[in-house]
Length: 451
Image (cartoon, rainbow, N blue to C red; front, side, top):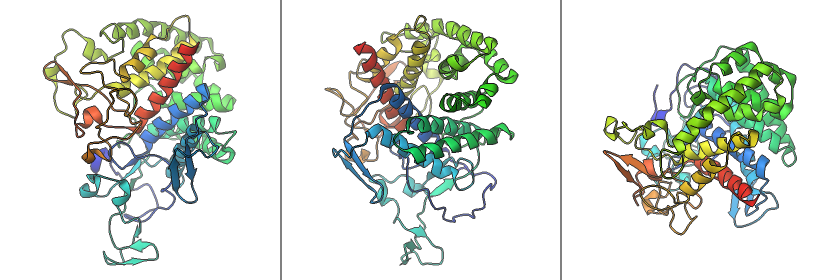
């Protein structure tokens, strides 16, 4: 059954009946953009760069207080704990919550109806915040329950890519939370290992669902999870799997593009732990083959950023595809930020081969050096920034400070556009992972420029 925003529910895999309440899913994570869903895939790819940023740059900013017992967050009020570590913990707690009921990752939570989904305003007003009870009339309430059928739905089918993606994020989170959130770190690592173990012993299932990976054909998520668990634990079994015949052959079969846009940056981080000469040689060789393709994309535009290859080809025609759901219309800021993050590890691992330009150019691009205008994609950062954007307060023609939009889109036949209009989600939407990769990139730029 296909629901809203790409969420799907296949055959029942849990013990829960339709519309039965599942407890423990109401803490952790972040609502994505102007939607009010909690997609596990998005939360995983947000938690990961935050954890890596903490590991690499150790920011100690403390401007926020979080009181879990009272469910209270106070801005501009320090509580003695670094904000970034608290956010990493928040992401990990959400991922753990959707693993606990059945042992696999639930893909996400979203409103049960279109009228609720298109609600504009504070998310707290979408439901009455009481658990639905079919025995009560719609206007009845009793012991924290109500007869109003406005509870959100959780989608529950297992997806192998999401399992590995979550394992990777939890392994990284567990590594950086050890000194401040010991119990959470141990639970995160234990859960990551269980998810990995399960997928190693069961046939893969890539059930289509919102924000869940599809099968790349080259074990992208499995490689990433294996590397992250190896880096966190040092356990031989992860090294053995990474250096298995099947995995080595998979890596050796990758094209430079698959390597550079997939597991390359993760494999490079594992180089010091790799003892198999064939695997090490394949990784370094593929990195060398990826470099000229990377540089070619950067040279294809005045901004020095790696626009997708299909944008850079001379014979590319904008008329070939159209529509707001087309990748030809969406702004590319978030993708560029992710590539910048990868480039940090390419340079860190092979400094004699890769330079700093890609990451620094992307940060400049996001902060205003881009087509259409000079507006910063980061709301509130820069003299002219995205102060009208697609967040939950879009109907107020305003913004969420620190939100990061995707940026200029390519409009037929040859026009780059970034309008001052809140309902063009393909230009001005916020997503949580976009904020996370920007945090990583700007901290990396600050580090490099201070060297």
